Amino acid sequence: MSFLYRVLYRKWRPQTFADVVGQEHITSTLAHEVESGKISHAYLFTGSRGTGKTTCAKILAKAANCLNPVDGNPCNECSVCKGLDDGSILDVIEIDAASNNGVDNIRDLREEANYTPVHTKYRVYIIDEVHMLSIGAFNALLKTLEEPPAHVKFILATTEVHKLPATILSRCQRFDFHRITPENITSRLRYVAECENIDLDEDAALLIARIADGAMRDALSILDRCSGITNHVTTSVVSNAAGLAGKDYLFDLVENINENNPSEVLSLVAKLHNDSCDMERLCSELINHYRNLMIIKTVKNPQKLIVCTDLDLELYKKQAEKTTLFKILSCITKLEECSAMLKSSSNKRTEMEMSVVKLCIPNISSDNTAILERIERLENMLKDGKVVTASKTEVKKEEKPPVSATVEEKKEETPLPPPTPEREHSPAAENTADVDTLFTGWGEVLEKLNVTDKPLTGILGLSSAYIRGEFLLIKCDNPVFSQFIRQGNHANAIKTAVFEVTGKKFRLGIYKSDDKKSNSSDPLADLVNKINNL
Image (tube, rainbow, N blue to C red; front, side, top):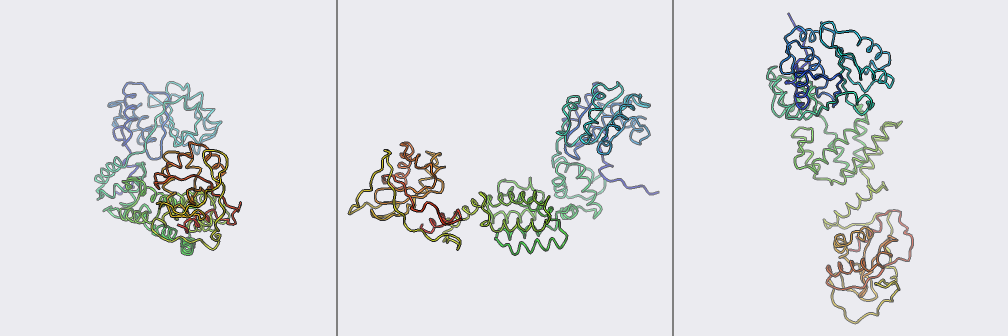
């Protein structure tokens, strides 16, 4: 005689509180309440999917009616326990609030609650996904929930407790179920696999636990799927069964994005579109891919936070070395914006293509994130000793503008001193009184000011400085700077920082341009020209 196959998560559903994994803070309390006879009239179980809410509700209902409870657990041997298990006793009623969410359904429940149970001590109502009830249904349930008949118990379960009215929450004894740790899931999987004669590798069990994301039911379902493929479950089998394999196109996309190759990226998107790949799903997968790169760049042991095989983890690490954290965060931000736009877009492919082009060519974006990304790229090129050239759209090298009046501690203007025949050599640059020389040590001065005068450092921003004779002329487009420099404490802070860098005392001045408005529409044009003069 052949028996119908039962899936693992149903076959191995815990029958006692002691069998529940990872929720000891809840099961111990419930068992003690049953043992002491202090069973509440209404319970609320909340937590993510697959963490044991419905399972604990069934165990509690059975333990409360068991004829011979053992330490607060049902014996599973008496007539009541067996009757509840095989469905012959109907005094424990499970209600799916998603499909029974109306006022009439709750009114029927209230009428039934008035009848005493036939075979058990308590009539128990388990209402799953209770947050799906309508407002009217909640209101109909309130009175009965607050003062139910002595023979009625309510157990409410939900994954979205924030959707429940405060009036419901205040009438229940609440228990919060935690996500089950990968270690506990792995241990349970190994036990089930041994009992089912499944050869489960340790690495495969840990990978299943990480994929399950704290849900024991999901973990057992994945193991069930893997055992259907082969009796020897390895990480490769798990990867194929869970859909982790075949993600090479994500690595190819990110590789070409890092190389600023929009042509190849668009070709890959076109190929995926022709293969019936959903653009919203592709965007979500790219966000998760960049999230994994972010974890690798910021965490010492990323394998604990990334769900992938060891081979893919090495690929992630190699790809993370080729990009910066700022680039990764910028891509995540743009893809999140794309994800929101895709939901309402009439042409999802075009929306996705626009987004990946922006990722490849940050120059076409004028938001702050793109500008900062371009500045970071220029800084990295300077560190590597590369020559930075302005693009065709940038302005030509500007001519030396006239010098403004200088600023000392006094607010009045002071004329420039006449040139001297001989000057002491300065680490910054050699100069004459009528020639402006770019002060290359200005970056070091700003670093020192960042310690001694942070407000002034923020105002200086992308400023630069020139030397003319014994004057240090500061060029800054921030209109507030002229007010700050006339304050003695800020001027002294600059002088001190310059002296520490150059070993020479300078008088301060403001470097002004005749052109009040730059002809360049690119905010990085001036920065590129300054770099070319280094």
